[in-house]
Image 1 (spheres, rainbow, N blue to C red):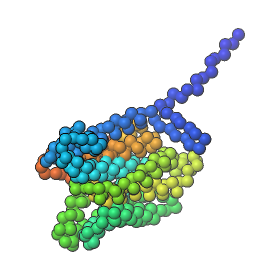
Image 2 (spheres, helix red, strand yellow):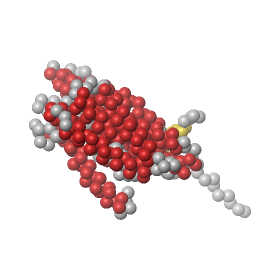
Image 3 (tube, helix red, strand yellow):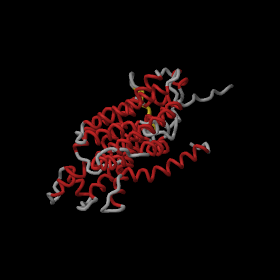
Image 4 (cartoon, rainbow, N blue to C red):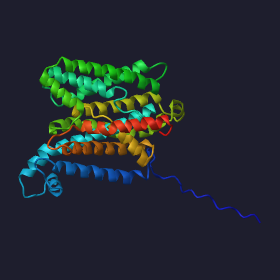
Length: 359
């Protein structure tokens, strides 16, 4: 008698959580929810601590009570927290989130682990337009800067796409052309600063270092719609980014409309990068560091990588602002200097590992 072997188990052995509906298939690595929860808690804790730090220190519990509208026994807390410090922290968190998501998109599109919004000139184009407005127009309304910076980033991205097109849009050509256009944009930005009024140039230089100093609700509200629209759009396009990350031929074999999807993802990265430049200036290396850290924690699948990189990016900017405010207090360092001090060695380490074939 031949004994039949038992039927193989249908239970998947892969670490995925799967939810399916007739119209939507959504998968997320089981590591994503706990990592996202911990990253959110860490970001909120850093924001609360940062709000409480300053010439007028406020205990963390009183910060939380003030934000929630609960009584604290001190009437001054409401003005200090809700008017002066809370919008600054919200801008920092949103800027970091946008940079993290934009960096993850750029790394996925170019299939280059060293890519971020600055490497192909997106941030440089946005900076050029914003500095031009600051130096020439001077008193620019807060709502105009995001639109103008997005226009500069979009024009730069369009030029990169057109100049890199040669029977197709190669990721390598996109990077090389982007580096060249970034150099041109930075040269023009320097030219604008050289011939500008000394007061306006000083403002532009402080802004170019990347800082959330003095940010208020006037900067928060124009930034919010860009985050609300384009971060969910990026997450919705995550499965197409997964396909594009495998290469054009594979993506076409999977039914992806390569040019259309790549264009929409590039538009999303441009919009997020342009909005952050308008809100806080050029904060470097966040778009490089956040996706790499997220990839180590949740894996390469962009369905979980994009939101994780966004939350980690928010934490990096908030933490950098906290370090900048406290390390040489009462002198405040721009958070862009802190991220550069950390990000430059991080970039060199990644470059060294890539040369050895470990990235």
